[in-house]
Length: 427
Image (cartoon, rainbow, N blue to C red; front, side, top):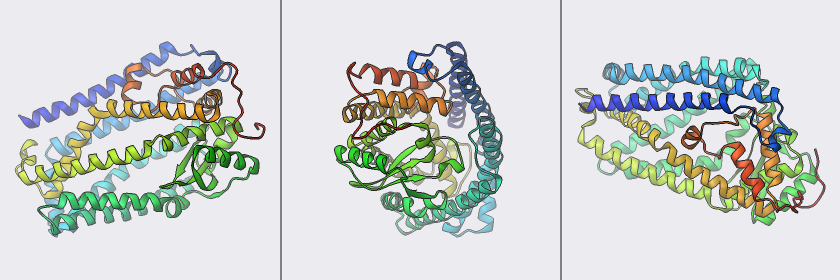
């Protein structure tokens, strides 16, 4: 009975996702072309048509990937393949830690192999068709090998360490595993900008001295100390643009994609940075970290309780399953519950984005530089401008673009200038 309920719950999740996707596609087609003035000034009909084609192409390949995942899940978990696989790995090694590493390692390898054709299609067909892909097959292969090596190292460290703690402290491992993962995640957060990111990108000091001075002035007014202001050669892989802060504490590294430097003028760029600063000054990053650790701690305790009851195999109609096999079922259950929690998480994220936008307005004195910058980024990235309200409420971590820009315009005084810091705008 429980197995049937779980299966129905999973199929309900898939049906809800497909329904949302269908509503979104239908709504975009009906609403397309009704652009507000600020968008109409910068996005012509041809660009709008290409943005719709881009969104539809991404959704088609996403649908194929989703359906393949559904089939594999149904066969593996509900079709009886999991117990057979569990026994197969146990026949290779019955050592607790090695069995766990092999169990999840082989599954991760299969998942990577299944994902390779989709990655190739996205980069060299879909992204290339719309002018975003700038990498050759050699760079793609190099990135793939690096990612696999780094992923394998982290997997062995995280999974191996956790399994060792389960063995060493069978009555309290949930607390030790959480502490181990929490400490390691913070360590990796500190380490990544210096050891991992440079393996994929080349960082160099910002080559616009006047802009760097204005960025430092903006950071100083926001109460943030920047150790370095860098630009990264993201354009050798993609035409998409971004900017971000790294670091913990008051000292931050500001990283700007070279594509962002090409697409925005200085006023818009500084407004985008002011928004990112808003996340830090409003405590969003700290809140997300704390929330994530609370969820992780609760998840470890729930996992500890359920694994000790040995009820999980029976829920899925299985006679018995190893410890790691039951952990896999727990992960699947967490994903199922997480889907229905998504709209709450998305709402919370959109609330943070609003607060960061308001911080940017207060810092630069106007919402117009951020508004025009967002319109430019929407144009350059072929962003979807007409999501269905229900789809956006469920999935969007940011307010829909048109709604967000209009909100920024409404909060801009009619006599507000576009000056941000000292110096003239460029671009």
